[in-house]
Structures are given as C-alpha cells and as structure tokens.
Image (tube, rainbow, N blue to C red; front, side, top):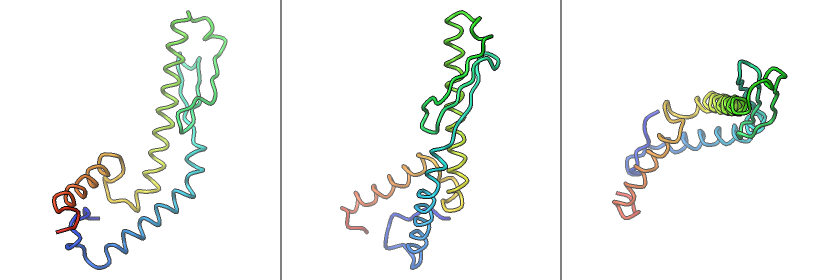
Length: 138
C-alpha cells in the first residue's frame, strides 16, 4: 500500500472505500482479538530456573514460583533474580502480544506501519499539511 497523500485533491476514487474496509477489518479484529490478547501470558525465569514468573499482557505479575533451592540464596541475590524473572516474563508477554497484533493486523496495515513511530509520522504529515493550508485543504 502506498503512503496516504495528505492532500485530499490527490485522492483517487475508491481509495477512501479501501481505507474504510481496512478500518472495518481492524475494528472487527479488535473486538474479536481483545479476549485473546487479554488472556496472553509471558514466562520468565531467574536463578537458573529456581524462580519462575508468569505475567499478563498488561504487565501484571500473575504467578511466582520460588523453588526451595532459591531460598538458599542471600536476600540480595534472591531479590535480583526475582526482578530478572519478572522483567523476562513481562518482556515475553509484550513480545507475544506484539507478535499477535502484527500477525492479525499485518494483512490490513501497510508494510512497516505497525508501531507507534510510523503512525505518528503519518499523522504529523497530515496535520502539517492542514496547518499550512489553514485547515481548508489545498
């Protein structure tokens, strides 16, 4: 898909319909995929598997398992390994969530459009065009 031209005078008939269809598919996925995304979890370990953490897609810690072997660690090392496991679980959940979104939305979004930077860049170009034209177009 080509980049959206911020100038409405250059839009061809049918482009807006395609964009509306693409938006409808995205909204349908959001409604259907929200539950799947919310139920997604990530796993992380610390201390050579002595500490295991499960985190939800929102980053909240859902479960912590500390083996008896981990209890032999001094308190500082135990805390560091616990934090490592939590961070790894949160990172894993985030990776899985991004993969799920990328897979689901990849077919309806232009290549490279997934992520905050491309979206912000497109909107900035659109806003810049309308600011320069006084909000009335070309």
